[in-house]
Amino acid sequence: MTPKARPTTHDAEDDPRNRDILIYVNGALVPRDRAVVSVYDSGFLLGDGMWEGMRLYNGRWAFFDEHMDRLYDSCRAVSLDIGMTRGGLRAALDITAAANGMTDDVHCRLMVTRGVKVRPFQHPSLSRSGPSIVIIMEHSKPADALGARGVRLATVPQVRGLPMSQDPKLNSHSKLNCVIACLQAEQAGADEALMLDPHGFVNTTNACNFFIVRRGEVWTSTGDYCMNGVTRAKVIEICRREVIAVFQKNFSLVDAYAADEAFLTGTFGAQTPVSHIDGKPIGTQGGRGPVTERIAQAYRDLVRENTR
Image (cartoon, rainbow, N blue to C red; front, top):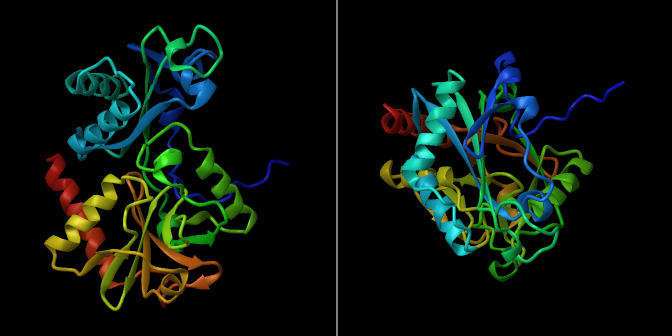
């Protein structure tokens, strides 16, 4: 008997249309069951690549420029030549969406690797055929049950590392650090891992950025060791615009346990309430509250404004 899948922060409503999607692979649109890359690809061999998660609303990509800034900055940092302009990538995204008849409630995983190697070894110079570019798009709405129930976090021993080991700001294919954290959380009976920074302060989760609300103030990590989240940045922007006190600061688990509200941010789920941390309930409404609701509504308004 197949065990029932545990809830995740990326649970989506089942959509049968996703069984027949076309995937963009290096300029070709390929049926899902035939979309492959070489076993010699740098991404498969080494996790040598960068990716972006994006959403399509009303036929438009939300915060497209911000996502492209992050992608091109990350690739430049690791000397990975995408080989396409932003306009070329935009055209590839739009072609893929049109081929699948997608206009709204669509999630996209855009992946760029250093390409196929001539030998299965580490040195980047062995990747000589140019980058591999893959675009996976799915009809994807976050599952209602996740927002209703809230996410249960467990603090794990795996930490977000220092920038000189592997900078967490790189949206890299090398996600083993986060996978280990996710496994540790699952073994503790939680949905996702709450990861600390190298100094023991609350940082982020294995897949999302993390916020708490205390006495009307919104707190998140300093940003020194967390993902360079587009949604994280938008939430901070919203707080400043809405005159909600917001702080990027060091804080400990003691502060997180005593929070009135807590939520995760990410392109897929936007704002997802956190109901428990290490088995301790957050607030009195499963992590929800007036500040989180105000931010979530302002974020929905911002998405509509950006994609109209």
